[in-house]
Amino acid sequence: MNRRIALERVALILGGTVIGGSIFLQGCNTSDKKNPAMALLAADQIAFLDEVAETIMPTTNTPGAKAAMVGSFMNMMVTDCYEEKDQKIFIEGLEKIDEASKKMNGKSFMDSNPSERTKLIKDLNTQLKAYDTAKKDTDPAHYFGLIKQLTLLGYFTSEIGATQALRYVAVPGKYEGCVPYKKGDRAWA
Image (cartoon, rainbow, N blue to C red; front, top):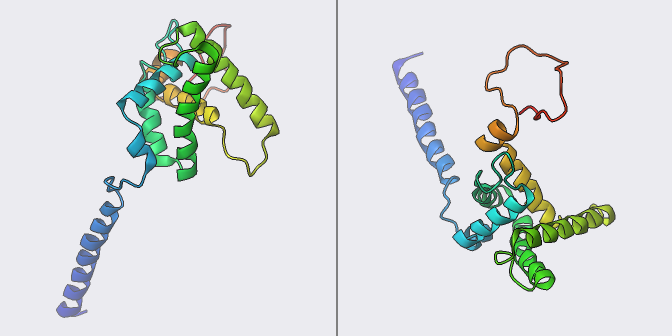
């Protein structure tokens, strides 16, 4: 191979890397305002999600979902990972929860006390189970199912959930198929 061919190939590889890299990075641009979740999930809605998540996973002898900042996690997941139809269902679900609270308790979800919130969430969970039982493959997801799934995912993948609610081993040793379990022990992360 002569020097001219080698230089042409190096220039081609370098140019492809520079141009390909800039095209790749343009895909990471988040300034696109077509995404409804970015436009609609404001700080007050994230605080609302934190309260809903805290009702689903309350603080007991371990911190709850609010301490794990599950509302921010849900915002990120809906914005970055959900399809547009599921984003719309999720966002409309926030309004439906508030409407259901006004219908059941005579006040908004945020103004309700913890026992009223718990009663509402249990009612929504019952509705979700009935919906899932009768659901066809072509039916859309239920809004409360999306919120509940993200609450559990966000909590148990957070540092608080993995280390305080579950038994977490950062670097596990050998595989042990049978580990003694005593009633009341936490699950493994």
